[in-house]
Amino acid sequence: MTATQAVFPPPASGAEIVAEVEALGTRIAAVRREVGRVILGQSDVVDQTLITLLSGGHVLLVGVPGLGKSKLVETLATVLGMASKRVQFTPDLMPADIVGSEVLDEGADGRRSFRFVPGPVFCQLLMADEINRASPRTQSALLQAMQEQRVAVAGVEHPLPRPFHVLATQNPIEQEGTYPLPEAQLDRFLLQIDVRYPDLEAERAMLLATTGAAEARAVQALAPEELLAAQALIRRVPVGETVLEAILALVRSGRPETSADEAVREHVAWGPGPRAAQALMLAVRARAVLDGRLVPSTEDVAALAHPVLRHRMALKFSAPAGLTLAGVIDRLVERIG
Image 1: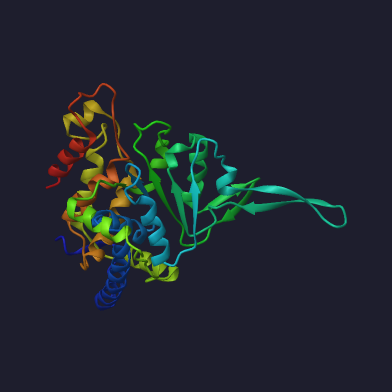
Image 2: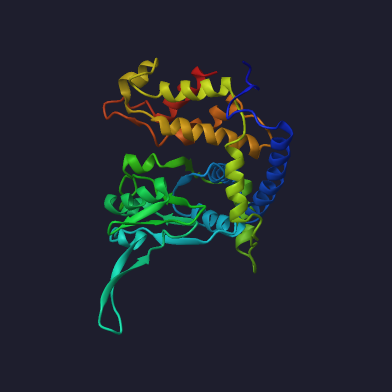
């Protein structure tokens, strides 16, 4: 079976999928244009964030302060027409400040009853700003919401709106006043996107665009209902046998128990689980559609290896000083060709 022959999902009407993908491509192009009016010099970050949203996942944006991470989230909320809320994570933030809590009400007849007051997590796009400045207990309050799209308070489950996405920003761990995110929560993020400094020309354009009398503003280009339809379409995009095997080979080679790479077996503390393969399976489809292609390729797998794996692997403390996780992932990508 060749790379162009679909093995998952089952074959559908070719003309129907082509038409739907082309229509989605037109809408996504409009989204990119609107975001690009505000966010300058971060095209890879914007594309990877859109890949995450099209895949129905959550994204972790990692970078030093001042690189426009919060601005990107605000702009996406506007362009996608999503009800958004922002939580500024601080060391004294409590879980109830995120998911909500019950309050005791007293009626006119003197009867008392508990009433649930929803927290900011009850929105379509939650911006968790500087998520690693809160304690692990508070960080873990998002776990159920991110995975199951509902929260349980006092034994009662409350569903979250759809679509629901968490776009979290994080300062580098080595900065003061930060806490490492629990591994279980890291795994809930589809991609970890490293936001780097812009190049000279991008920073020049940014300086001119943001210090004048008026700044560019984005307008809505997609509705939440259209985003849900796009996410359903992404799951219908065919994936070839070659791409499927590349995903499995990449993920399994990152686990010390099953890897053929000596450095992984000796120096990797823990590797990516099945959720990493699921993330790649969805993300390569979204990347192909974003590029106007109907079928993903192994190049998509290689391009997304770092943002999918970097937060799902860790080196041992005994690893050699010159060995980096980025270098290990590069070697794993080389093995899949």
